[in-house]
Length: 272
Image (cartoon, rainbow, N blue to C red; front, side):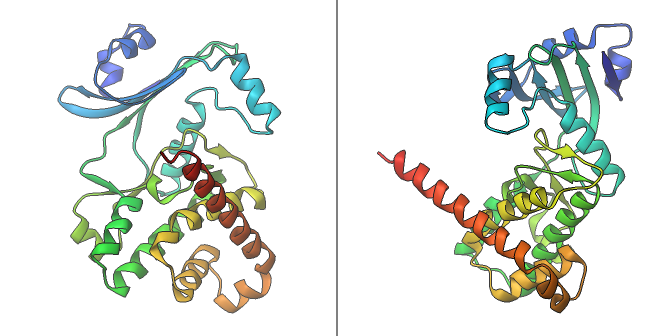
């Protein structure tokens, strides 16, 4: 068993079964899937988000492995990603409690608790608002710089998100102020599928960047916008990036377009 408790939980649960205490927490459910629940709770008047994993079963594990996907069996990935990214200066929700017990991966129980971020708006919602209320080129530049630098620093820390979309970049605080200060209050969230590797393979960087590109297509990014992202992400002069990373950029474009086609096909199939 592994147990990490910060305040206020270290004091409140001293000498108690932390897993039983998590089960007693109540609050608004944000997501409920088989074997996993995410909810908001209040403790001593402070808001927290809790993710509880109850085991996915061998069927789910084998299904993922058969599809050549690494199954997510608990909260460990997210705890590692949050603690590592936070230590590297990437703004993420603050993790305050983590626990895992059980050696059987199909029945392993775990939980993670993070401090609530408020007030918030995700960048997908925010940039869709810009379609009706356009912002200045300077504001777009600041946003692109912020997202590119966060993605670069995430990958430099050896973390790949695996669900790297604009909706998982959460702006905390006053939006008008953020547009002036460079979106410094932006946090990276939903890291339960994230993985750490000492040396991040190119294919995983491409997956993250292509997902980000796909989720920003509604912004109708100009060539200048894209070049700005590339300069910041690769931290090299644009001429050098284009000369050395051409095949990688082509793979990003192809993968983003495949994701778009799959997205459109899925929604067309679900249309009434």
